[in-house]
Image 1 (spheres, rainbow over the protein chains, first blue to last red):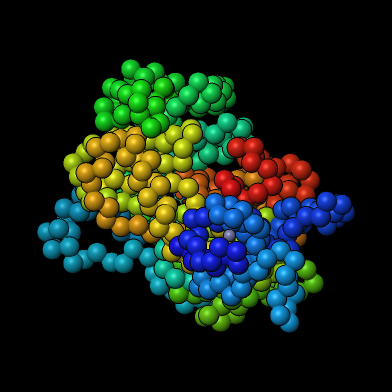
Image 2: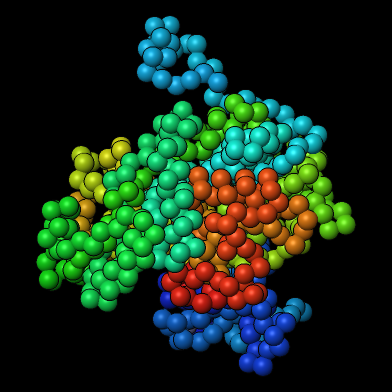
Amino acid sequence: MLLIHCPHCGPRAQAEFVFERPLESIIQIDEALPDLIPKLYSRVNPKGPSWELWRHTYGCQSWLKLHRDTHNHTIHAVLEIGQTPEGGDA
Amino acid sequence: MQSYSALNLFRRGLGGHKSWTRAWRDPAPKSHYDVIIIGGGGHGLATAYYLAKVHGIKNVAVLERGWIGGGNTGRNTTIVRSNYRQPALHNLFEFSLKLWEGMSDDLNYNVMFSQRGALFLGHSDSDMIRLAERGDAMRCMGIDAELMSKAQLRKLIPLLDMSDEARFPVVGGLIQPRGGTARHDAVAWGYARAADALGVDVIQNCEVTGMDIRGGKIVGVKTTKGDIGADRVGICVAGNSGQVAAMADLRLPIESHLLQAFVSEPVKPMIDTVIMSQSIHCYISQSDKGEIVLGGDPDMYPTYSQRGRPDRIEEVAGQAIALIPALSRLRMLRSWAGTTDMSFDGSPIIGKTPVDELYLNGGWCYGGFKATPGSGWLYAHTLAKGEPHALNAPFRLDRFETGATIDETGAGPMPHHR
Ligand SMILES: Cc1cc2nc3c(=O)[nH]c(=O)nc-3n(C[C@H](O)[C@H](O)[C@H](O)COP(=O)(O)OP(=O)(O)OC[C@H]3O[C@@H](n4cnc5c(N)ncnc54)[C@H](O)[C@@H]3O)c2cc1C
Ligand SMILES: [Zn+2]
C-alpha cells in the first residue's frame, strides 16, 4: 500500500485516498468535442512517472496532484491544486 | 506429437516414463512470418493454434517475453461462464463456453474443465430483479440459467450463512450450471503443444521492443532476439496492451490496474460450485487441490507493479467469511497480483488498429480467461481474413469515439469497475 504525504494531513495510508485520473485527462467544462473524446476515452497509460489527480476522500477531502511512478511505486511529489512543481509543469 | 492417452501412459510407464519427449519445440525465430502474435498467454497461443488449424496459416510465431502462461493466464481464478446480459457479450462468451466443452479432446490435453456451476447470489429484491433480467436475456438466446430460491441454495451450499442477521443476507441466486473452472496452466500448455504440432513457432524469452512501421503499415517487429519481419502482426499482451500499442504511437482506451487472487491451505471438499455475488465483488471456489480460491475488487489505481495492496486482503477475506463463516478457520497460503488491461466500457477490444496489418486483442479487464478459446478463434479469423467475424465485430477499437460502447454495468467512460 502506498504512503501518501497529504500536504494538509501528513503521511496517510493509501486506503484513505481515491485515484481519479491522469492530469492530462481532466476535462474542462467547455471542452471542445475533438479534445473531449480523447480525454474521455484514451490514456497514455505510462509505465513510469505519471502526473495524476487523487483525492484524500477519507481524510481532508481535498484534491491533490501526485507525481508517481506506476512501476516502482515511488511518489515524487504531492501538490495542492493550483500549485505547480518547481521548474516543471503540471 | 506424442499422443496423450491411457494406453500410451501405460506403455511408456513400462519403460519408466523415460521415452516422453518435450511437449513443444524451442525454436529460434525465423527472419519472416506470415503472422506474428505478440504475447504467449492463453489468448495468443489459442490464436496461433486456430490460425494453423482452421485457416491453414502455419508460418506463425508467438513471441513471449517471459515464459508462456506466466502472465494473467497463470494468475487468474479460472472462472468460466457466459452469464452476461448484453447480447454482444453473452454471444461472445457462449461461443467460447462451447469451445471449452470440447477443448480437452480437441487439444489432446486435459485442461480439467469442470462444469460445477457458476452461481451469483442475490442479497436484496433489487438484486433478484437484476438477476432475473439477466437470466431471461440469457435464456432467450438458449443459454442455461436458473433462478435459485433460498431453499435450493441451502441445499446446494450448506455452509452459506442463510440467517437474517448475516452481513450479506442471501435471498436467492442465479446459477449457470454449465459454468465452472479449468486448470489455467494446462490451457497455455495445451494450446502451445497443439499449435507447435501444426508448425507454429512458440518463442519464449523474446520481448517485442519496437515495431517497424513504414508508410502506415507494419512490416515487422524488433525483439530481444533480433528483428523479425511479418505480413501481419497481432497484439495480445493483456495488461501490457498500452505499452505495446505505444510502440505504434497508439493510445488506447485502457488503464492498467492490478487484480489480486488469494488461496487458502488445502482442505477436504467443502464448496463444489463457483460462488459470486450480484452486490459485492467477492468470488469463491475450491481448486482440485483443495485450496479455497478467493478474488475481489481490483486495486483501483494504475500500476504495473504486480504487487497488490494489502487492504484488499482484509476486504476480500471479510466478505468471504461473511458469506461462508466456516472459512474463518482457514489460513491463507498465498496471494498474488496480475496487471489487467481495464477498458473504458468493461468489454474487450478485438480488431483492427489505425496501422495497416496491425491488430489488437486486449481490454479483457479481469474477465478474459473464460474467453480464451473464443477470443483465440475469433482473433485468428480476424487475422486470417483481414476482417472481423460477426461475433467480434461489435468489439472494435473505434467504438468509443463513435459512441457504440458495450457497457454491461452502465459504468460510463471510466475503466471498468471504478
Ligand atoms: C488475479 C486475477 C484473477 C482473474 N480471474 C479471472 C477469472 O476468474 N475468470 C476470467 O475469465 N478471467 C479472469 N482474469 C482475467 C484473465 O486472467 C485475463 O483476462 C486473461 O488471462 C488474459 O489473457 P492473455 O492470454 O491475453 O493474458 P496473459 O496470460 O497475461 O498473456 C499476455 C502475455 O504477453 C506477454 N507480453 C507482454 N508484453 C510483451 C512484449 N512486449 N513482448 C512479448 N510478450 C509480451 C506477457 O509476458 C504475457 O505472458 C483474472 C485476472 C487476474 C489477474
Ligand atoms: Zn488530507
